[in-house]
Image 1 (spheres, rainbow, N blue to C red):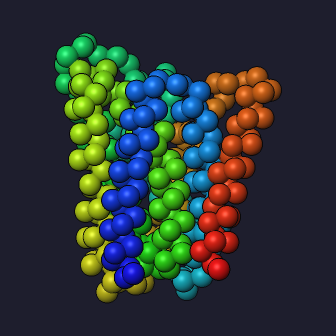
Image 2 (tube, helix red, strand yellow; image 1 turned 90 degrees about the vertical axis):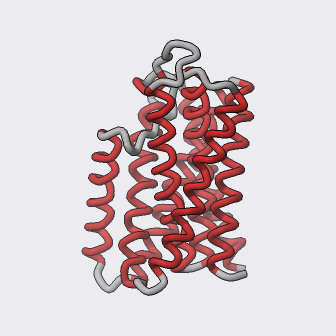
Length: 255
């Protein structure tokens, strides 16, 4: 299978899977499941960033300083975008993005979250394309990590749309349409980056920065709200499982 087909398959499958799973969790409204998914997603994101993406970026770059600088700049960039409400990750029940709005109003909250989510999906497509252009194995691991963190995020987005007055069918449809931005970003990046291979290490570093930022700035703070020893042990185990799944994928795709 060609690299382009890998990118298309990963983008379509990843988007459809994350939205479908999110709808399932949101409609069943089992908060404990979502919380467990968040812990697992943290491990998958950090595992992919530190065990796969950054090593590949360093290996394919002539300068360690450029790669580390791109990670640092990427973290600052994603912080700025999030502050501007263009990159909005909210994975828990008590944040300003989850404040209920008046029923039957397709208001600012729902519109804002979908604009941010579409932009986010488009960037995910670029990240997937950059990873597959570097190495197919890296692309598979990157796509799996993105899917892992997309599910809890999509659950939050789904609930916001319901609060904004969308029906369940409308919320599902809007999320599916938004997920197509991943495919658009991936295909455009494939054609743009084929002749710019020197840019791929920087994009991989930015991809690692986005995963580190989402895990550390957006997801981990929500875990601190559950302070019992049992909850903490469960979170640690699930984070380790997330990391282990990346290691397992590495072993499987390297055979």
